[in-house]
Length: 103
Image (cartoon, rainbow, N blue to C red; front, side, top):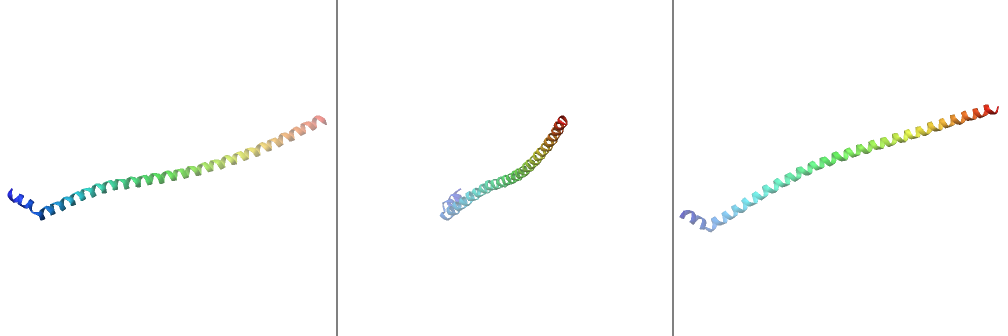
């Protein structure tokens, strides 16, 4: 025990023990920091992947909406044209009926 006390009382040994303690604390702190930053990096990569996937899906949905809008417009124009044709036929039929009644 006396040997231990005499070693610990030595100033140089105290300095080395202090340095060793600081190195130990710094190493533990670095390990904790690395673990936390690794988790954060992994989480941010996962979030970036999810964001990219969502952006791709939104772009696809926008494309589909535009295609549906174009299709609806085409059908609307076609329907309008068909109504015009039917109206012209009906007008022609009314004219023939009127001519037959008069003549």
